[in-house]
Image 1 (tube, helix red, strand yellow):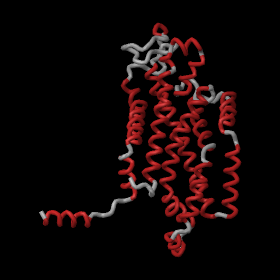
Image 2 (cartoon, one colour):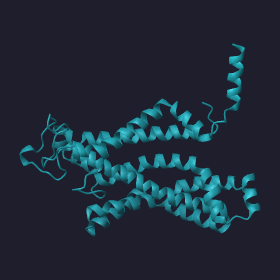
Image 3 (cartoon, one colour):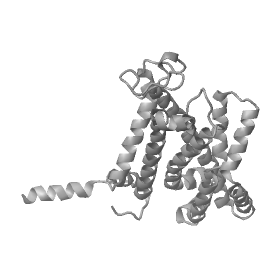
Length: 305
């Protein structure tokens, strides 16, 4: 028994210390709410991106004799006013809404992290100029500006397929300011640490200092901010599409699908037309927020769980 214990102690001593990422993954795996959110989001991705391949219906297939039918064995979530399958449209709408959220957040992350790093590294005039630009963008009412831009796209009769890309760009360009401030503050503290003094002594170029040594140390902040930003972008896209100035028919999105609830008859007598996409928005955003909270706790070095 004593030999076994000694061997166990020796093996434990020889083990390399766990990396910060492995410790963060361990903490995340112990957060039950975050895991629930992760599995829900994974299910939504599988449903939206793989589900349509198993549907016997076509997105643009109309059946006048089957219009406004309630859920049944052939149409699990019923049909709309053109006889189109609601389940198929909901899954394809999920693709659009999730892609808009991911791509627009990626644009905001690229802009925000780059400008924040430049402001924190160079300070002085560069810092002042970038932060004042951020203040100007923060002073702009985002939703009214998006509504105006959406109306301009409608007047220009932009094709719905290309309109989605403009929507992603608009949401991304108007959503980088908060992250840039966080990155700037982190860079200001990082550049005073000992490893940066060693980098300065080696005479490495500024570009390498920023993108190889400073920005990688802000990845936890970027991950958490990006995760929560996706949820915000999905809500923004849904609101704009609901108002008819975001993603417009015939391209489906969760936002323009629930816009049928504007009709009181539909609202009362045909709930299968608007409840499924509305529930998808609710479930997806809640799941993303749970994941974001879990990542924030997992990546926080002060967490001892």
